[in-house]
Length: 250
Image (cartoon, rainbow, N blue to C red; front, side, top):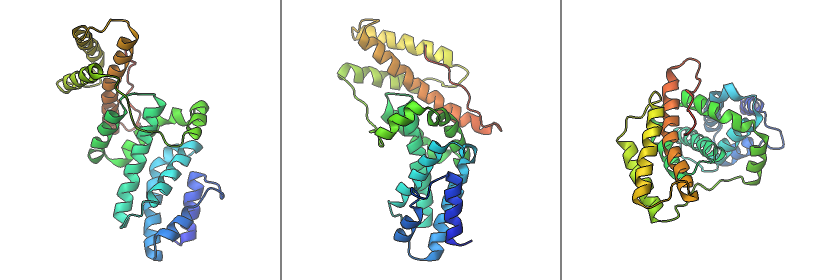
């Protein structure tokens, strides 16, 4: 298959307009031999077909295309390096999008949790399950309008003072000692609330205050993201690839 056919296949699959499609220029600028260009394009074609279930969601495909372009800008030295970087860049981008859309606060810990899991998970099921989480986001016009105004979301979170840091560290250490699974999520959330209330009392935080409520929400999100990761992993053995639902925080 020649270069033109590969470019056409990618553009058609992702539904990218002629005006926006710059993949051919980037490939020409970054790689010398036609054989190497064909190999890189082959890896890109393999990559985009991971997203076949979502190809009719145009904003999602636009995001996939942007991942491809941004990875090409990094000028990797080999085909295998490019493939690995493309997959990791895409997964981290989509995870970041999910975190932003859900307006979660513990972004650094969440991204680290997902990143540490990438090497242990098969790529296609992970992408499918992430895609199922992201699908409502890419169909939410209000979110898409907001995202267009802020193309890059800074991954950061703020901790107001030493009390907040100490409590979150204590909760993080407590979570590490718990058996966390989807079957016991209700009891986990109840026990987490009890642990938080004990800590809040120790630090003289008034129950029901704005600070108490804010910190309570953020601590529940720490557990929710661990449950989300387990949901993604557990659902990979399910032929339907449907994520196991995470119950809302108490």
